[in-house]
Image (cartoon, rainbow, N blue to C red; front, side):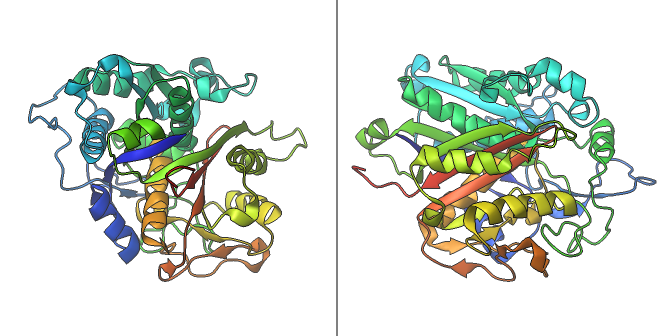
Length: 405
């Protein structure tokens, strides 16, 4: 059994798990005008930006002039997760600690599917969680060097779905006998080429109002807003975690990944299959799920497709749905792991955060989106969903840890 024992957060609306969770429950947004370069003439100019941290400084205090922003933020998140788990890597054998990170290939991810397939295992391969990308290898390598980690090392490329794939890969590696894995998903692409790549997707909202620009599942949805940052988690074998008296946030009970068929194939998207497979992997039924943290693209046709999959699995308004990422934007590979953080905090505090910004959900969607205010309710089992561009789907089941289960 694999459990989460440490969490590090670098999010647009909060640094560290406490600040991020307080912002998520109160509705404090990290969406603001992109001001790192001149965006005049661009069709959109809002993004989820990490503030109050100098990404040019290593956690040790050393400057990292040759390291990109994404890797610098990953170093901060990784340090936070290890500190939160009370793990001293210097006191452990580096061979006992593995690392898996998710990343996104920047502009190529949005504009060149052939390039993406070249560097990752695409729809023609099974076992998508075996994908490798040299882009994410940068984050993996920097964090491994910083903490002298010599265990299994993997970099994954699946855009927004990558964070869940990283968690699934960490769980798989724990089952092979590695006692501890550092799992991360952090991204940033807010230089001029990166911003151009976001806009090239055709899905970024041009609404200039931060309060309404990103409204997933809303009748007025006009697209998503990009963000930066993400989260890192320490994943351990449950017995090893208990032996060292670690605090356990939750169990990784189920995982699945699928790939959408070609658009003209006549076959349905793979999201429903990912949901059903993850539930089966966890040994539960749809009735056991207390809340779903949705992918929530903010693009009407994608929201409709996700709503359809949820309705088909859970029934009409059969389970509460939420999308706290409306406060941060979509963080590429960092977004799904940040949802996992929200999932474990929902379990810990018996509360479901609201989808701020969304006001009216089309009746045809047939889903129960938590709106306005957080909803108090017992939360034992959470389903987290993510979809990446070019057809990636992933689903993870997080369950309250029962000692001795």
